[in-house]
Amino acid sequence: MDVARIRLTELSSCAGCAAKLGAAELHGVMQRVSPATNDRVLVGYGTNDDAGVYLLENGTALVQTVDFFTPIVDDPYDFGRIAATNALSDVYAMGGRPLSALNIVAFPEDLDLAILARILEGGNAVARAAGVAVVGGHTIKDTEPKYGMAITGVVDPTKIVTNAGARVGDVLVLTKPLGTGVLTTARKRGLIEDRDLDEAIRWMTTLNDRAATAMLAAGAHAATDITGFGLLGHAINMARASGVLLVFDSSKVPFMEGVLELIDRGAVPGGTRHNAETHAAFTDFASTVAEAVRIGLSDAQTSGGLLVSVAPQRVNELIRDLESSGALAAVVGDVREGTGIEVL
Ligand code: CO
Ligand code: CO
Image (cartoon, rainbow, N blue to C red; front, side, top):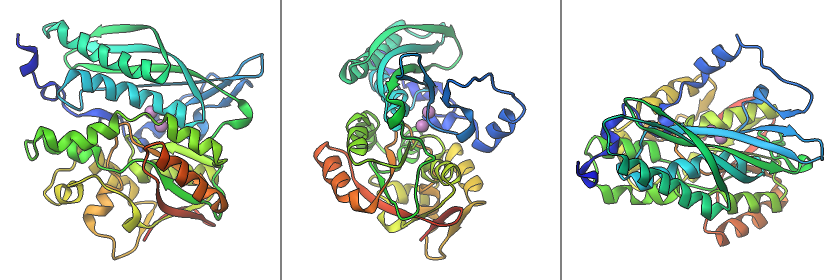
């Protein structure tokens, strides 16, 4: 078998974080489950936060998360790097420091194991760059390949950044442009070339570590990373958990090159379409917001950036730190009294 000629994305029915179950469906399921919990759980199921936080006896806290998905790009090494970057992201979004990782692998019996080796090499390269030790993992036979990591980190319990702390008057800052769902779907359908995915792959393999350091230095009130539920889906979790209204200026939201045109041409992943339908119920769009932008704001991201809620007097400091760390620093909206989301 010629490893180089296998297109990994052809082995998966839906790609990346667009493959996750819908937020509303998941909420319905979790309502039927009584979670096993105790008073050491500082952040659990309740607020739909990025990661769980558990207080240890020595006063530090564990931050734990898991993420895995089907191939979002054809190159196995890039797939591994993207999946690992994405898995680490939830720890950074909470203001934590990742320490160790476990690989999670599903792999078809008849597929060349050299591909799996490349996937794992990619994941390890990212872990190494993040200073994270890969300490084990688990594999299972499956018709579709899947890869990701379970991450354990630590966080100072007095410095946890949840999605519940946004305050009226805060400014909202986004650290990566949107559009990975649309672009990877367009590539899968042959609407664009491999090189048109370069920008998306570069962002999907950019760790949120330095953005998180900048956010902590600026005393951010709340944060979340943008993944499968799209900007609006993760924003509504922040709005609800914080008891505020988030107002976005859609003209300030950065999209990757070609994304809005591709949406107009119909390159919309199923997960993004589903998000957009769900998000319409709690989002008040100004009539001037184009259809492609509305869908783009719900695009299921893989390994997206952080959405940070920060005091207005600290925002310039945050932007300066983000820009010098190589992240994007887009002021995309602000926090007001009310509930839900408004898009201008
Ligand atoms: Co997250
Ligand atoms: Co996640």
